[in-house]
Image (cartoon, rainbow, N blue to C red; front, side):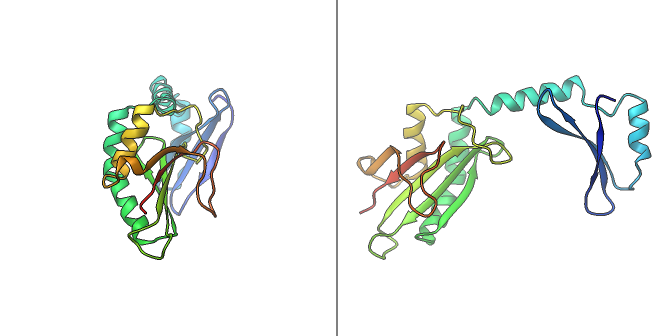
Amino acid sequence: MRGRVYNLHAVNPHRGVTWFDPATNVVFLLGVTEEHDYRVFEIRSANDELMPTRVDYEDLRQHQTALTTLDSDAFLEHAERDGHELLERALASPGALIQGRLGGELPTYVQIEVVVIDGSAEHGDVYAAVRFADRIGQVQLQVQLTVELHSDLADVLFPEANPEHITLGEKYFPYPRGFQRGDFVIRWRRT
């Protein structure tokens, strides 16, 4: 074996083993058993069937590539479906920070907060902070949206908005969350 394999204890009776590859900075789940029988892993190791394969590394490379590139059409398709639900939740809870994920396996998080100006659900600015993050929440600053995609995303998230009332690239997001490094903020002025 290359390096040390670690026991992974989960909810009984499941047990597993993991291995950290320092070259890729990735922890691989090498196997899981329901029988709490580590002999399964020992046999796989003896048969050279436990460690990651060339195919596993190709899958990893493709996933890492997906973190730095974006299929615009696929992203907008997910954004339209998922973004509508997020906006509805935000409009139903003015002043509350509503968080969600757009894009399925795409590393995209969209956070929406409705700020009510006059106490009415029909008024108040809506802010959407779009940030790219990996699966453990680390912001991926290398993923960039094109100018065209910014505008398309505003249209998808806020279909009822007059384009004159949309501001792209705000450097402000309401308290208590505030503007964060890696945010792309879209503001819909509904007054």
